[in-house]
Every structure is written in C-alpha cells, then in structure tokens.
Image (cartoon, rainbow, N blue to C red; front, side):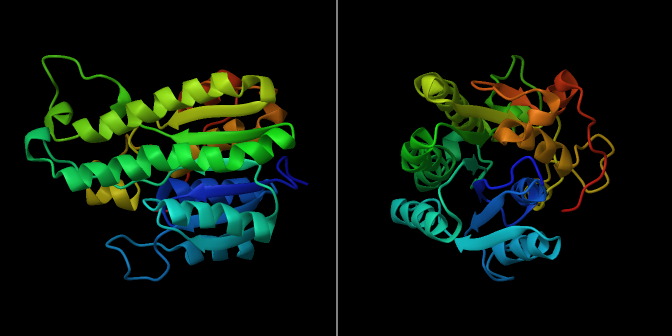
Length: 273
C-alpha cells in the first residue's frame, strides 16, 4: 500500500522528461495516473517519448495508468481531459501542471503567436485546469495542485550573465506568472484543505527538451536527475506523510532544497532521458 493508494492524479506533459518521471513516481505510491500530453505516436514530435510509453512503463511496474491525448493549448481539450479522467479513474485528487511549449528568442524578435501559445500552455492551462478540478477537491475535503516552474522565474541581475541574454525572457515571464498564480490560489483555497505549490529543479535537468535547447548535456556532472524532481513532487502531492510534511502549501519550492529540509534522501539515478 503506497501513500497515494486510492488517489487519482493528472500529470500533464507526461510523455517524457520530468512529467513522465513524476507520473511514474506517483504511480509507484499507488496513485491512479492519467498521463496527458499531445504526443501519441513516435515521430509525432521532434522529441522522443509518448503518453503510451509512459503509461506502459507504469503498468509494467504494477501501477495503474491511462494515456489521455490532450492539446493543453485548447480549452475544449482541457475540459475533455478532466472529464475523461474522471470517467475512467474517478474524482481527481492531484493535478500536476507540467506541460510546456518553449521558444528561446530575444523579445525584439519574438513571434507574438508563439508568445500566445507559450502563455496559453504554461499559464492559462494551469488556471483552467484548477478551475475544472477545484469543485470536486473541495467536495472531497482536500486535494493537491502542483505547478512545475523554473529558476528562470527569478529576476536576472545586472550586468547580465550569458544565460540571461540568450532569449529566455518570455519563458521566465510565464514561470513568474505561474508562481504568482500558485501563491494566490493557495491563499484562496487554504480553508478548503487544498494544497497548491510550485516546484522548480535546483539545477538544469537533462530531459529531451533541455537537451534539444542545449541547456545541458547528457553527461553534465552538474545536472539534476529527473528523479529528484519526482521525489520532491511526491512530497507536494500528498506523499509527504512519511516525512511528516502533510500540510505544505503556498510554497515556491526547489527540489533539492525541499528534500534537504525534510530530511529525505536526494535520488542520484534517473530512469528517463
């Protein structure tokens, strides 16, 4: 019996990387997991990994998972996602907003349609999914919403570093908005017992996305394994009972810092690229 036995979780952007790792970790603790993303077939995207791959990995390990195709940039897909998960797995206890579309381009050259797409997927989708799952969480006396953020949300210092000038302003703006949404929503639903947090890695995580954007390398000794984010996410999604951390909310947390604070060993291995 895992600490999340009987819980239903949605994890968006779970076809690869951090999202896939979080989905697998929640399932290991007994959660019924909906693996949500756009990629359903190999070759559909420039990056490896599909929702069916992640769901199959969970099931092969004895967990419960369904793969639900969803384009998080579309409001109707978001509504269908929640309805389908509720129908197949039951009322939703956990919602992890990990989906992201990212372009690294200086502001002066940024295509506004790409700007709209980034904001839609990274910010508006998180707000909309919260609206869709909050009523049933409130009825059931609690729930967990986790928004995956980034250190890019922190304001750059001047004179700037090379990383601050490589075109990440819009990405950082989206993550900063997501963090302000997190703390505001945490305050709004505090009395309902619903925990809302944001989580970022302390260091760059080698995933298909970060490798594609040349943010790190597969052999970077300073990179953070995806399993670290997954362990920290578990704590913030109701899995902190064994560490005594059962009421964490309104946190803008960093993976390794959170695990250190709670005395939880930091994983050193990874299962997904």
